Amino acid sequence: MIAIIDYKAGNTESLLSACREIGIEAKLTNDTKTVTLCDAIIIPGVGAFKTAIENLKAAGLFDILKNIDKPILGICLGMQILFERSCEGEETEGLGFIKGEIIKIPVNARLPHIGWNNLNAGEDVYFVHSYMANVALKHIVSYADYCGIRIPAIVKYKNVTGFQFHPEKSGEYGLKLLREWYCDIERYKCLKKE
Amino acid sequence: MLKKRIIPCLDIKDGKVVKGINFSNLTDVGDPVILAKEYEKYGADEIVFLDISATCENRAIAGEILKRAASALRIPLTIGGGMCSIDDFRSILRLGADKVSINSAAVKNPDIILQVVKEFGTQCVVVAIDTDGENVFINGGRLNTGIKLTDWVKKCEALGAGEVLLTSINRDGTKRGYDIKTLKKVAKCINMPIIASGGCGSVFDIVDLFKKTECSGALVASILHYKATTIYEIKREMIKNRIPIRKGYNNDKF
Image 1 (cartoon, rainbow over the protein chains, first blue to last red):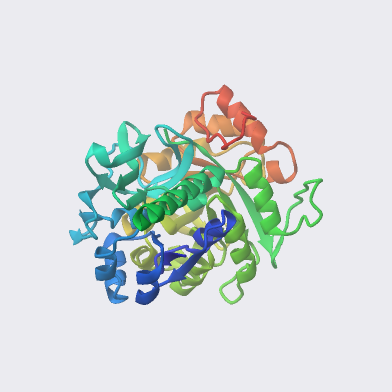
Image 2: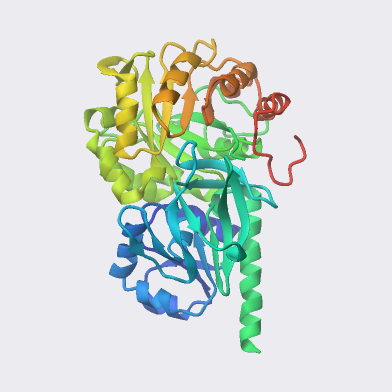
């Protein structure tokens, strides 16, 4: 079972139904025990970094997530909080799974970066954000180009994956990417057993 | 590269779609969810449900419709019409909308934008503005507030809104094309994305819009509902004119 972390950060209904559609058993939860016992975790989220961290702390989930050794997928803001810190508003500490920080998209174009943009080796996916990860190239699986700026779109480090876009809002292709992540965690589970 | 969006808008009254949308293969042409899904299949990049019967006292987009839409759609969904308070935003977003558009209530109480942004983030606030090109109108375009359009959009941006949906009340329903002049003027004074609405009479108006302005998306209603064209045709014409569009996954029709 996959725990989708419920910390009052936006639209989780479509993520749940996207999981259902591709046969992932997922549950929306903020229960610390469920989070500890699940096979993998999805951290969704839209909104502000600081509020997200505060909500996680209030639910007693921040420290649990920080120390967890399971496959984790962060989506949009959920991806951003996987990093060490963000300078959105006042500087706030994140979960620190991946080295790097969240910065305002340094672009001379319209913000937020809203809409469909293609991955460098892939199809169009739906983005909606004004901040992005400033992260070492080795952690970037895929990026999207926005007026000359390479926005990290998929990042990965060990058991932790981040999607800056919304797979649940990115049509069939988004579902495919979600499905691929899920297949990966199945592999991870087998490896762990060995 | 960021793509230009085609956004069908469905007007909903008492839970049913009004305006003559007519897909021959559908039996229930009044169900907003079924129609939205159909538009998604045809290549829509986003969907807007505009609740035209909504007032502050009466929310006609039932939670049930919204929940079904959020489950069924794999593209973003915006809900508008009769938003009055932060509680309206809260309930609509919880039920599964990705964005909420706010019009009159924001003009009457701009702080509501600030509050929603603080709680849910910039990305979910679409400020809908009805204008004659100079001033901001409210109450369905009937009341001139005397507020200057350029002042209002700048204020919305400062308060943290994520997008502007600009409707030209002079063009709405006329099929004379989008109000390019006003859209250009607004694009100059703000940095957030702009969705154009009102006046679209053909695919060429959409091409014209994207060639002449910086708009990020085009709201389309009548020309789709009355089957003057399809999203396929719109996108084909856009490709011909080298306007970047989203190509559907596993979709070789383009």
